[in-house]
Structures are given as C-alpha cells and as structure tokens.
Image (cartoon, rainbow, N blue to C red; front, side, top):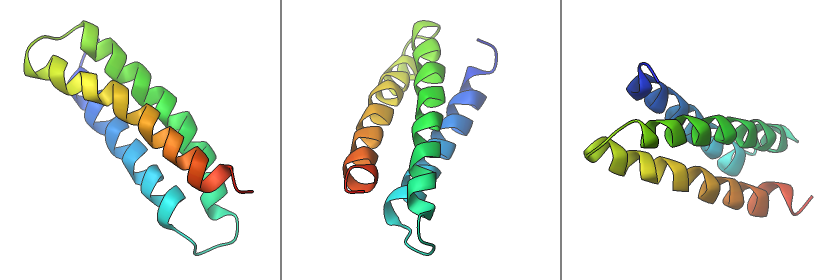
Amino acid sequence: MKNSTFWMILSGSMGFAFFLIANFSHVFQGANQIAAVIQLAINVFVFVVYWRAYFHSNGLKKFIAFFGIVFPVVMASITIYRVLWPH
C-alpha cells in the first residue's frame, strides 16, 4: 500500500474525531446518533487501512499498526454501548 503512513494518520484522526463527536456532543437532538453511525463506517475504513499496513510493515510501524487494528473495535464497542444501545 503506497503512502500507508498518510492513510494511517488520516483514517485514525477521522475515526477519533467522530468518536469524540458521537460520544461527547449533545448540541443537537439526534446529532450524536448520526455521528455514531458515521463513526462506525469510518472505523471499518480505519480497520482496513491499519490491517493492510500491519502486513506490509515491520518494526515500530507494525507495532503501531497492531494498536490501530485493536482501537477501532474498542471505540466502536463504546459508541454502540453509549450512543446507539439506549435509543
């Protein structure tokens, strides 16, 4: 995968930003549910990017990519439990 570092940074920052919006914003009614669904879709993209980077890298980048595979699953679970489950 070409420019995997760029895609890792871009996807990780988008996933974390939507995680924060979905879980900690209560400005508009229903905005956090919409952000939660978008965040789940972005987490699939994050998972795929880091999965591919994991198999095409070595050393420290492989170590970072491993955590990039684990964290989207954890963040998605938290979002489902806090935002989508109660409604």
